[in-house]
Amino acid sequence: MTDGLRLQLWDDNPSLVDFLGFDAVVAPIVAAISTPDIDPVAVGVHSPWGGGKSTVLNLLEKELSPRTEFFVVRADPWQYDNHDDVRGDLIVEVLDQVEVQFKEWGKVTTAVKDLVKRLSWARIGLTLGKGALSMQWDVEELIEAFTPRGRTDDRSMAGFKDQFARLIEGLPYIQRVVVLVDDLDRCLPPAVMATLEAIKLFLAVPKMVFVIAADQEMVRESIAVSLGETNRSNAFAVRYLEKIIQIPVSLPRLAPADAEAYTGLLLASAEAASPDALVPLANRCSERRKKGLLPLLGDLGGLAWSPAETTLALATQLAQGLSADRLANPRQIKRFLNAFGVRRLAAESREVDIEPAVLIKMLLLEDLHRPSFQTLASTPPAQRGDLITGWELWAAGSDPEAEKPEGIAAETRDWAAAPPSLAAIGLDRYLDLAASFLNVGSGEQVSDNVIRLVSTLLGDGEAAREAGLAELIQLGESEQRAAMEFALRQARRLPEIDVLMEMAIKWADATPSLVDLVIAAAEQGLRRLGPGVPPMMSASSLKVDYAGIINRLATDDDVDDMVRSAARMELGN
Image (tube, rainbow, N blue to C red; front, top):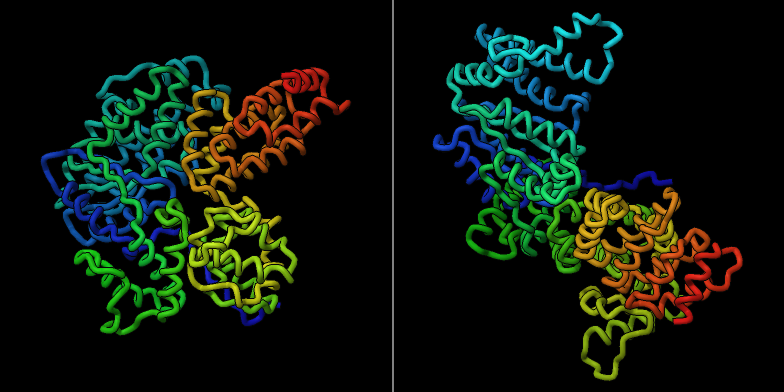
């Protein structure tokens, strides 16, 4: 049914070409690595989810690998198979790559084998401690295995760091061994702690450099979780991380001009004959960025190949239309483009003719202003033209008598005023198609960060829940809506939903446009609500919106007696 149609998608893999202007970040990191005054050194590359950390590691590897004074090791603790000994896996990975690189020097192989032997004994002790091998050992062997060993014993980790330091010091012609640690913020808290312990306790010796790419806040939270919820855990987590990371580097949020250029480069990749054709475009962006010239993807006439003007116009349209939170995050831009690619193919397969610029504008409405999109989609086809005309007249502000149409959010003014105009375009077939997807896909695409925050929101600690809610409230309104939809869908998996409803009510108090989701969830789970829910709704700033729910709880005979009494007390107040 889709013969001849081609779906263009952009993967989440880090780039080998600098589309984001990260040369300004890579250069000082390389300079820090090359400075002999700090030895060993650990650099933290920090940004939220999807901010480009892995791309920075790729660019660092590309810069350092050709230089003979550096030996680069890539490590990704998130992908380790042995989750019981992540610390050991990281150490072995470094040792293994060192041995492969310098295997012609026999001393290196011998030293590596000795170090692995120490590690193997430590793993035996770990396994025995879990009881996994206890049936295969007699008492004397167990005593021998658990006997504390001195630094000189080749079965002890006590002397590991000194022996590892001698190995690294003896590597020929190498000034620095650079370990690039990726995806640490994807690991569970024990794995995060194990990785940091391996770096600090066993691998941090002269000539060693660690570049750790991670969301700093998530790593701190993992440290705090590992310590248990105490008054000192958060403060200790901050100090612990500061002792390991000497040079923190925060990746900049994308400015609108950078986001426009990044989007243009992504769209251009669909037209380019090969990835190599994008390199001159990225270089031109870098040159113009240094000179302060805008747009960054401008003055392309001298290049052997450049994207079509319509492609650059789409990039501009998208950069102007996306909300600030999406605009500053490279992964969110890719996800929006993927949604564009999927919807475009769906339209083509149904023979729905819609221009790319119109499709992007409609997707922006659906993504950023979902209730207003639903108003448009639910309007009878014969009345849609009048609705859009009135909408655009109100947005333009040229007619003082033009009023905002009913059911349309005031926040859509900039969207409606932006080109292209939709008043003369037949959108009926596209709206029918989009509406058919809306119920299926609503709220499904949420980021790893949102999943983490929702998990915190439903956790055990009240302070952690409040902190998670505070972060969720800082997201853009469309992402908050997707996040709340995701959170409320967890209700069917929870034995009790009072905590979920409490947090949802507080959330809607801060973002009133979400109250319809809370009401719908309360109606669906009416007989699961506890006696604490009516007082929470009554105390809410949106009490009037919850009046119907409270009335139903007060009168429904199938509701628990305590819940019904609590609702009646609130009505009496």
